[in-house]
Amino acid sequence: MSENNQIDSDEISLKELILKLREWGVYLKSKWKAIILICFLGASVGLTYALIEKPNYKGALTFAMEEDKSSGSGGAGLSGALGLASSFGIDLGGAGGGGAFAASNLSELMKSRLIVEKVLLNSTIIKGKNTTLAEYYININKLRESWDKKPALKNIHFLPGSDRLNFTLQQDSILKQIHKKLIEIDKLSIMQKDKKVTILSIEVTSEDEIFSKMFCENLAKETSDFYIQTKSKKAKINVDVLQKQVDSVKNELNNSITGVAQAADNIYNLNPALNIKSAGSKQKLVDVQANTAILTNLAVQLELAKITLRKETPLIQLIDRPILPLEKEKTGKLKALIIGGLFAGFLSVIYLISGLLFKKLLD
Image (cartoon, rainbow, N blue to C red; front, side, top):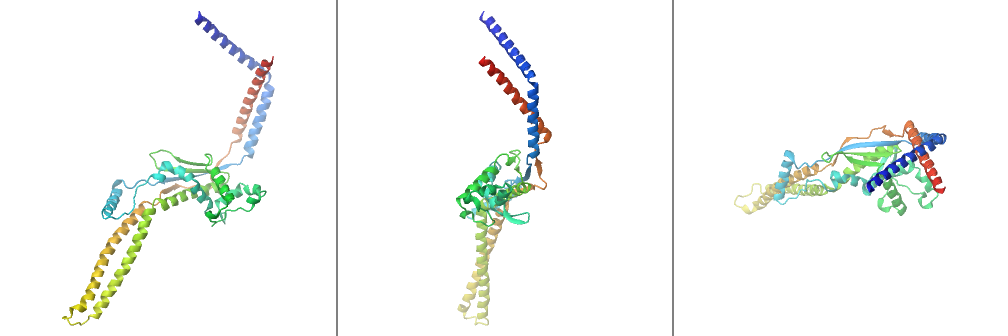
């Protein structure tokens, strides 16, 4: 008995729904003029937006991450040489990658405030003028017009060669806001198509074509420079130290060779019975032999250190650069007209049905 009541209840609910939909259809049909008018207004708004909308320019750069060269025949040979040097207590620096410079972490590194600020504050030539991207960003976005009313911001500039450590609180705040804007998802995109592929791409979108191109290129350059200064820092220190040692020993060897020649001149035609007089010459000769052996060993170490440094530089191999004119992104007129009309029509239907339901509740 209860099952029959449940079926009857479902049938009644379905009938009520159909009747409601039919009632709404009739009501909306009676308001077709208003709906068409609202759709027309919505389409007009969409078309107007498409006409006045400023286009966005997308700068795209593709680069390849440096792979771990310790694998394979060439890497095995270098690893063997480094291992041999290590067995003698010579630390020439590691050759492994990873860490902050792994492909999975590079996106966050490029979006960091440190890297973005370096890009914004570096001196660059734009339209024949030496300036910074920070100053250019402020000008193209007309931010200084609103700052004129604020005395603390009126005379703020980010000129080439400015010392970042001497920036005021207002300058720090401005850079922070610019950084926040630039790393938004629709402004900066750093993608790796496949985890197995070390090719990544940077896409920068802005309303200025030149800014998109230069920010994209400089972002890759600054990341590469940061890599060289950090990941290869130990290897660079080893090269510098070994180079100084080689130069020092070479000078000592030259002095020893000169000393041998002078001692030989002093004992020329010396009585063979006076052996003590030749002791100085023999000592200088020992110094020459010792310095020669030391210099040979240091020269080998220096070349190995240079190989290690070259192996770790650079991180980024550029494949494609942004080339003017850049890809333009702008809403099409037809697309804006259709979307505006449909959206306005949808809102008008919701409004009319809501008004009908509200009216019935009051009755």
